[in-house]
Amino acid sequence: MKLRGKIKKAFYISGVLTLVNVALILISDTVITGFAKDKLFTDIDKIPQSKVGVVLGTSKYLKNGNINLYYQYRINATAELFHSGKIEFVLVSGDNRHRSYNEPQTFKNDLVKMGIPEEKIFLDYAGFRTLDSMVRAKAVFGQESITVISQKFHNERAIYLAEKRGLKAIGFNANDVNLRSGIKVKFREYLARVKMFSDLLFSKQPKFLGEEIEIGL
Image (cartoon, rainbow, N blue to C red; front, side):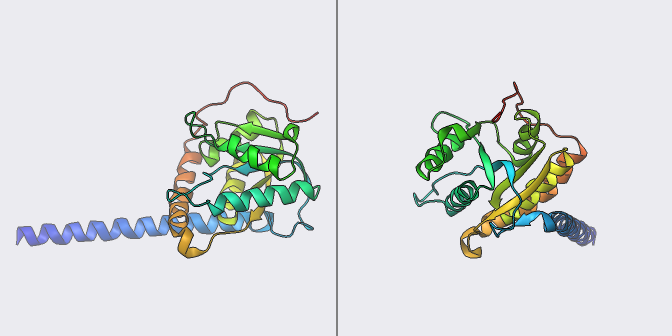
C-alpha cells in the first residue's frame, strides 16, 4: 500500500509539474507574440528605414554538410534591406567561440559577395545569445533603434528583449524553414522564451561588453 501511495504521489507531482511547464510555455509564447505583432514586417516597401540592421547569427552549414536555410534566408533578407535603402549599415551579431567557428565573419564574407560594401558591415563577435546581441547593440555599438533580421519566431523574442532593455526595435522577417526541417529549432524556441523571462527577471547581463564601437558617422 505504501509503495502504491508513493507511486500515485509521484505521478501526481509529475502531472502538476508538466501542467505548470506547459502553462509557462503558452503564457510566454502568447506574451511575446502579442508584443511583437505590430513591429514585424515582411513587405520591403512597408518597413520603415533604420540606420542599422542587426542580423542574428547562425551556422552556415548543418551537420550533414548541407547549407543551413536559416542562414541563407537571413543573408538574403539582409541584402534585400540594404539594396532597397531600408538600412544604411549591417551589424552581424553572432558566435565566435573559437578560431574555426566564426559566424560574424562568415556572414560578412557572403554579404560582401551579395554587393554590400565591407565598410558598411560591422561585426559583433560576442553575440552568443539573443540577449547578448540586443544589449550589446545598445551598450557597445551605441544604437537607440534597430531593425532585427531573422526568422519571425526569432525576431519576436529579440524585439521583446530589445524593448525591455531600452532599445527600440522592429523586425524584418526572413523566409522561414518548413516545419519538418525546423521542428527542433521551433521546440527550442518555446523553451528559450520561458528562459528569457527568467533572464529579464534576474537582469541577466551579456557574457562580454567591452569598449564602445561607433557605427557610421
